[in-house]
Image (cartoon, rainbow, N blue to C red; front, side):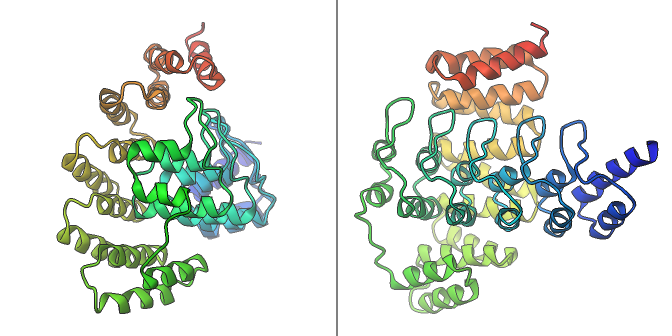
Length: 388
């Protein structure tokens, strides 16, 4: 019994580290592929969280369930969507992924990928048939999330374009009665408004052709199209962005960084490129460099919440909850009535064991949206942890 427990624990550790040979041997030796650690994670969840693609393949073939939930109600399938791991998500679609399954916030895999700017993951989710108009417990659909939590830039415009093409309802209202179109108009995201009203037409043929190739995963050909266009229009920031994006999808991260940094040199005030650079560093697992890029954007425009919000998301992923709380306090100072910010702050406080403060934060969310059951559920959880 002790030996089996040791094998199971070793399986999770090896899966997290990406040691394929050790994982295979442990399974042969009798490790249980569905064993859960204290956080309710199976080996598949541990491998998914670290984007260990080859280990995921082995565990799926061994029969691991992609829909098994951990103690936060997260499944490996939803985790792959929430982190933009579209290769893993694509694998799981072939192993019984529940397309309608939701996380603890009531969102399918499509919602967090739309929120966080994972274009290819959004495409995979839509191609698989995940419902495009599903709303989570905050009352937000994938389209609402990409409009409210996006910045109307190149990447988010492409996500919004995909969602609209898939039938996203631009008039679907959130819990405050506002639609995606109304939010876009208030935010003055002109391109997004045109996309939502189907008035936008891409005028650059090279970009149009490259995007079509990119949707088919023909990245090398897409880069060729963009590179040719850059020969006669070398300072076109949109062309530079797409070259960087396609290089990033090919995992040529250093080359992608060169493109984004070239764009920053041409126009240091185009904050979009700090976000793209941060994403590239995240893919390279260079945490401090990624955080520094967010900080550069925040320093350029301290009143723009987008970059600080996405930095806070990343801090939570890294388990740096003290820093995440600080970021949320900054966000709430800018927009005190954003109850979603209070909600995220409460989650970080709870992770830190600061349950009284978590309750105080979640009560701010409840004050703004008293009928939302999600907030009451999370307040109840904090009360339970306090023994109340």
